[in-house]
Length: 122
Image (cartoon, rainbow, N blue to C red; front, side, top):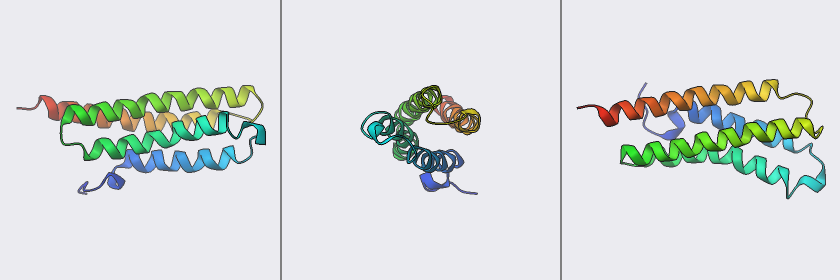
């Protein structure tokens, strides 16, 4: 299968599904968290597929990698927000959320490794 658009990337597809799940979960958070944790967790989640999309379109391989690395950072931030959400009693478990996030992380790591190999290819 040819990858012509960022939406063709499996990592983007999985990251997008993660965003949809985050929005579903955060709808149930207390209303006083709307401008606090809900805003932060949604921004972190949205940043992941957004940076993958932006990196995909960059022409320079180093630019691509920079955006993919930013997506990795946002993914780690999101994992922390899952942990604090559980500790605050807003979610019951982090297991399924962290499992999905880890899968996105593995795919993102593969995309970065593939891009780095292209950068060093003759």
